[in-house]
Length: 246
Image (cartoon, rainbow, N blue to C red):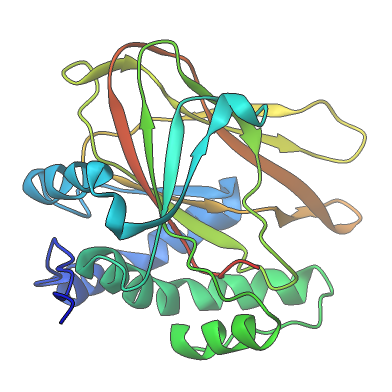
């Protein structure tokens, strides 16, 4: 008989923690900047537990070495199912808090898509379209590593917001390695943004684009994100993407 593989860390108290976040503030910041920070979403101990999973190959469905694909330097692994308890709980409990923003943005951009309130129903939509692979991932950077500006698109169905949680402590575990975003408005140069994070902080940000109110109505702003060069140490991040992949 094959032993059941255990997936840690556990998800104790996640729903209560997520419910205590000031989601009205998060919504306002997403509308204004395309990004919002939630301080201390997970604990230091939980950060260490998730980062330690990186060496457990049985927990992952694939590994990507960025330099082999022109993505930058460093590497990441996509979790297999079942997802670690904490990652799965965050994915299902954060999603419904972001649905109002997602649907408001979709309407403002003149898109027909509307997102269901429950994450399981959205995953069913992805799977019906052949997007069946889980997308939460664990990223690892060492000295000199970086992640080029990109968008995490994996198929026809894309939830417009995602979450990245920093698992390492800046200036203690690593230096450099800032989360960077760019915003490209029509007929304008790109606007760069550096998102300051501490260990356990979560950045919620636009996957692809967001609406902006201009003098002549709403227009679409294209968003990309990446990580600047790590100058020393090692940096781990967990990414929570709500749509599944082909």
